[in-house]
Amino acid sequence: LAGIVDVTLSGLSPDLRCTFDLACLQEESYREVAALQAIPIGTVRSRVNRVRTLLRARLKQEFADYAV
Image: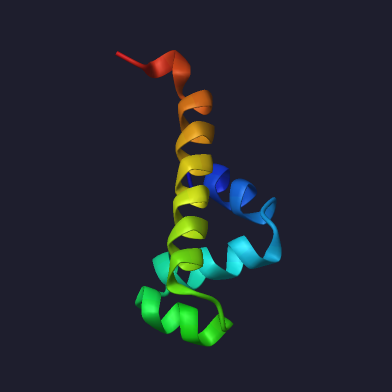
């Protein structure tokens, strides 16, 4: 599972990867991430959502044979 996540994250653009890393892996608040990257908080939200959507799709694809 960790390998799938790592491969998916490594394929992201640097902007998406950095935003996701700060917000989700390092658990910084969206406000802090926005300030650190000098971007609007809405951009932080959309980037995190985009990465979560990509991860969800990748995991569904990978584990489709195990679905109940």
